[in-house]
Length: 284
Length: 285
Image 1 (cartoon, one colour):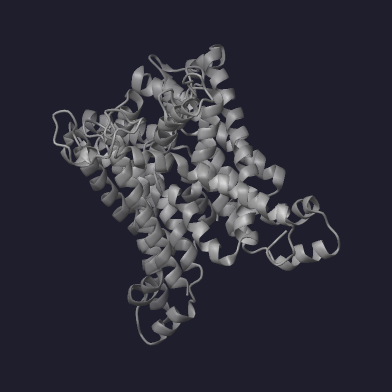
Image 2: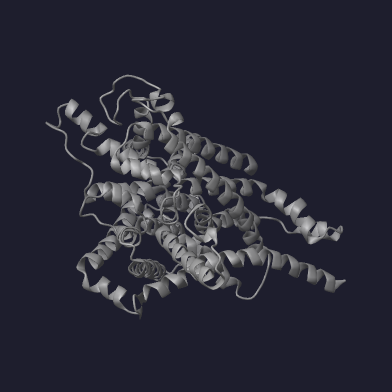
């Protein structure tokens, strides 16, 4: 009796395990090992040349450093805007409006990045809607190009990744007991102190998971820097794309891809260590 | 400070203004895109030259609306096929993964779980190129040793499906796992005590309980697939998906027909989003 029950349980395990294992092994593990192998191949077999090119050509590593720094900057800007918005929606606004605001917040999240970027393009470009109004009311003498520079690109990246920060933070803040803030207030704490001592520490898991997702999205984004950035706002994903699609140099592209992967893992690992958070808990 | 405490007027109005600006920032590009879909002009910009539905129903020769635009329609059809395949595949495997990680115990479970969530932190561009390189290597190997040409290993429909499936399944797994975690296993035990086997328990009890999250998973998988650019761009051949050709049109400039496409996509995404929320809330209560 007991034996048959155990064998049945093992069957269900095998049925669940095989597809999941095939998925992760064939589509995640092996392709990334192949990426690593290809990055060490040249025309005449094994070589470090592909990594060498990265360090000797300033255009490559400069793009890499720029992409990393800008991604960190965007993550911070997103966090600074997301915290008060999340707090307003969970704790300050009337409960009747709260539901509506949450829905409004979520809707753009379902619209594709490309369309959101396109919207900014028709707003900001020289023949765009904003220029039309500013010239119309006489604020500008003639239309100015507001697209294709670093500031616009950063704004675009903030815009496209914003919601991935707000949603996890709202998720955590909803669990924050109001009486903690009330108690602090009754004891005479200032707003800044309440934020520093209660709200931010409590929201840390949400802040971390939001930051990781935003950072990854920004670092790996292609459309926003390509369409909103200028000639000098090259993003590292564009270098990868150019190597693979335009120059057809897959080995060089593989090396760049692997470097980007290493960088992102390293920064996430460092951020988790610094804030003493556990990856598995943060991702949930 | 919060709604239960007395708040000064300036605090509240300042906060409201900030949030208002945020929501304007959030919606301005979408609203402008949608409005310009109805502008009777050859370019997606102001001045307003009158209302028209030509960018939806125009038959040409000057203005070709989306319903007569063969190239864009074909791409929409491809995207639909890809998205349906991806959402079916990733919901099936995602449900299995949820059961595997929530209800089974095995060696190296932690390591496998780590691998399962890894696609969340792998940039889509890198997933795309690794799958491209791997499938090409395997395809060449099979061709050289067995003399067979395996079509699904070449860039094209099935490679796009596999590439999107590889990370969308992770998200579906997480959506379904979140609900499965709240499931009261006493219900399963009761059913097995009454003589149901493991599979009928899963079919008649657990899956019924999971239904809302499975529907949510399908919706998320469909939209993520339909909108994906970064992974897909490395895996296409002659039949591009909608985001790929939209990108080319946005980059090179186009008539407001892309505003019409955007209008349709924004409206359908909003309907799905609201329906999903409504359905989720109804389940909760």
